[in-house]
Length: 445
Ligand SMILES: Nc1ncnc2c1ncn2[C@@H]1O[C@H](COP(=O)(O)OP(=O)(O)O)[C@@H](O)[C@H]1O
Ligand SMILES: [Mg+2]
Image 1: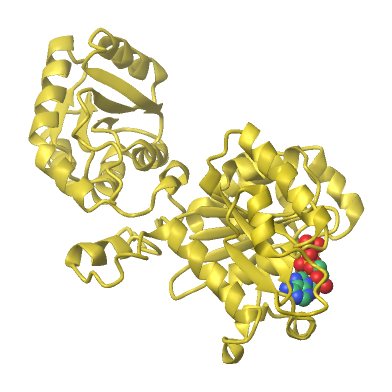
Image 2: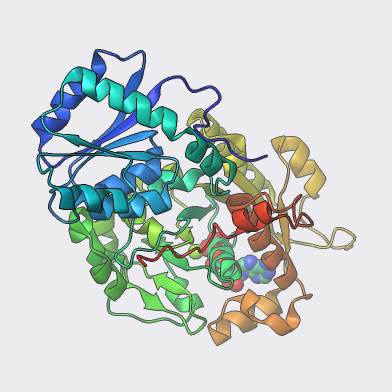
């Protein structure tokens, strides 16, 4: 059940991350290690302390060879963070500075060895082998307690305040128009917000986006302001563009007028890049999309952890859903990347039902419907009129479609965060460990 990602059993090659602000130094070490490529593999090579943390989280290398003097964050500070965040990795400090004070600081930060520059090939190989061997118990323990968060490590980054979050991206889409994408995206975002869970809703329907209308949110700043800054986006600027709904939900609004959409469309992958950059500041990012299949949409579905495909139980709905499912197939998305949701479902016993029965749809698409959201104009309308997500009305939790929308949020939460479904009763300490993975704030204490 537990992901033994990069576990030690099938491992015979030692993975190594190189950290040094001088590219030549990294190249030289890399060349030395390449002579022994049956034994060592360089999985990353970065020039700053901050990138070191990011790459350590991403690759979980067995060994990190770390320089001390670097701009932004020095090697000692980076080691301090890494030994807390990625205990499976062992840090070997390497520096021209060899005085006792540096050595002491390096060891206090959790480094396993101190090499002085320049290093001879044999000294390098021998040290890596020995540190790898000595670190084995820590590695095994770290994997045994591995957090349940699966995919997000690739996106993990360290935000300004030092916290790391799950950064799961859920894209809600329908090629239909009017199928209920915005309704489901806003409710999903709201439903995913639990204690200590940070959610961001992004309106990426750049032409007809109406998240602002649904949530009665107005803001002078929208994601259009972020596009020119996409290359060097910083958290402060990002935060200044994000709006906060009265429920606490963070919302990145789309272009205010359709003509502003051009700016996004001339740089269609910008939104996906923005998401990748800020993902680690959130546990979930829910993305509302327009109906078009274009580069913007596909850049979003590419980076998504889950795509919620919405359809209505109508002929055109099913036809459109089939088209999208085939497309995702061609793009080699894993079948379980897509969550197929039927919206505006009528009571199947109803006499004047005009829609297609769900079992017929499942047979035709050869896919399970993972959620059915009943049609209920009154409930949906009253929520929109008040500018709150339907699910925010906790009093009516058992009422359709509030219950179904809440259930969908819980379903996705469980799929993405933990295998809690079959382990809920298991109150072992290990399980507690696993659950603490989400929303865990890794402060710089
Ligand atoms: N389950 C439902 N029952 C009743 N009305 C719904 C339901 N889902 C969506 N609607 C309504 O249908 C309309 C279109 O929904 P919307 O979420 O804007 O779709 P999309 O974003 O796919 O265009 C809205 O007026 C919305 O309130
Ligand atoms: Mg919409």
